[in-house]
Amino acid sequence: MPNKPANSILKDQSLQFRLEKLRQIVIASELCVLLILAQHIWLGRWRTTEILIVLALALWASYLIAKRGRLMVGAAILLSTLTLVASYFMWMYGGVRDEAILILPAILIFTAVIASYGLFLLLLGFMLVNLLVLGYVNEVGVYVNNDMETGLYSAVLLALILSIISFSVWLLSSDLRKMLEKLSIENQRVRESQQEIHRLVNHDPLTDLPNRRLAKFLFEQALAASNRRELMVAIIFLDLDHFKAINDSLGHQAGDLYLQKLTQRLRGLLRESDTLCRFGGDEFVLIIQNVEHHEQLAMLCQKILSHATQSVMIQNNEICLTASIGIAVSPADGGEFDGLCQKADMAMYSAKERGRNNYCFFSEDMNQSAQEVLQLQLELRQAIGAGQLALHYQPKVELKSGRITGAEALLRWEHASRGFIAPDIFIPLAERSGLIIELGDWVLKEAVRQCRRWHLMGFDWLTMAINVSSIQFKRGHFELAVMEALDNASLEGRFLELELTESLLLDVQPALQQSLASIQDKGVGLSIDDFGTGYSNLGYLKRFRVSVLKIDKSFVTNLAGNSQNEAIVQAIIQMAQSLKIGTVAEGVEDGQTAAKLIDMGCEVGQGYHWSKPLPSADFLRLIKPTA
Image (cartoon, rainbow, N blue to C red; front, side, top):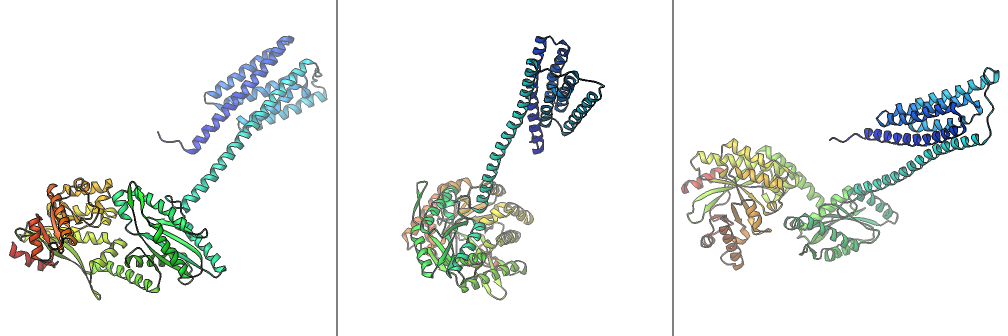
């Protein structure tokens, strides 16, 4: 059932409250009426006994009517009957000095609690008119009431009326107290909720450290305090080296535990005046105020690198990570928070480029370098539509026969003015900027079309392999792109091979598994690129139906003269054979290595021993003699 809207719930609660008050009023009124009725019967006052009996029945009937969903009708009957009976006794006995007049304020209180404002005004008007008329007829002598009795009967009646008035006052004050208590509790809840919202908005949920929003405010305070003392404020960016490996191999829970323990260590290294923040992922920011000289910051960074990144036990695994640190200082590097953060970030990346586990101060040379990177990203975006990108194809060779069985498509960028730009430079740029999705789609379509063209020329055994970035799977619609490329080129899926990294397959999300399964159902093969350099295990090989392992060239180079490399390559080949998975050796540069691989049982080789990556026309001339 759908949930009721808030106004409907409040309306129901109001009706329940009024019905409960009416029930209480009816019980109290019935009790008083029965006592008065008993008194009248005892004294033999039969003239009013019938009226009191009718009143008692009317009171009970009003509650039954209200209980059946007609609250306003029941309340009107109850209050109107009480008002009329009180007026009757005033006319029949003591007039404006009769005891019954005391019940009128109680009736008005009851009306205010359980009925509408309209009925309240109607009854009040009737009471006022009744009093005025009764007083007037007594004054002019048209009708004269009897004098009030002052005996025990009158005292008992007054006591009962006073009791019902007291009950009405108690009922009203009790409800008011309860309402005030609830309001106080609700106000406390609101204050606590506001505090929690403020904490969530301004703090990192995992470590409870200030986030970027709060860090900016704290920096401005630190800057003002340091400026008054003519001292410096520093922004220190700390980024863990290879933190992703923890999430990939041990899971995100282990990564979260590591970040929490690191937070505790970092806090222990800072002064009370300094602030530790977390901007997300494995990125921490330190705001250091009242800095007198750069050596003070250098000592702090050395302390962080030597103490904060010591080994930690997580889930019975000893984890030891290093960190890269970037530093920007105000006022020398600027006085604006976002600008300083950007410069500290540049310095941190410079520390990574220098070998990681290091710290680096920002310099203007870094700013110039960052601008060049941004310019290169812009030019890469333009290159996609300017025809500066091309695919080169490196053959895959069956080791025993020397026959070319397929090719790996490799992207090349020939810049109009800069000349050839290496993939190691522009591929990371494409991944950071998100261009890798557009680039990847272009590579996929072009490679599949080229494979189909070779088939139409008669080389219908050739397969095509392409490298796939994890970002293409996580941020794009890669499954649909593969299906569309194959359909448009009329190429069977068994001729396409996707080369993936181990880290992608270790991130076993259901959506990724489903996407890969759909691609494999079309016959597309999956190979693991650079196998042996990551977190190799047998589990994902079976789960994802991997068809080929590509042995990384770092193990293949100098294979004959390096016993460790030989042992690793032999182990990979034997494992692949036992799992009925194919093997491709990358980086084969001489015949001796090729012969060694044949002896070890490797099936396919790839490297400069046969050919470097070639344009499509040159690749075609290469395969014709082997056809």
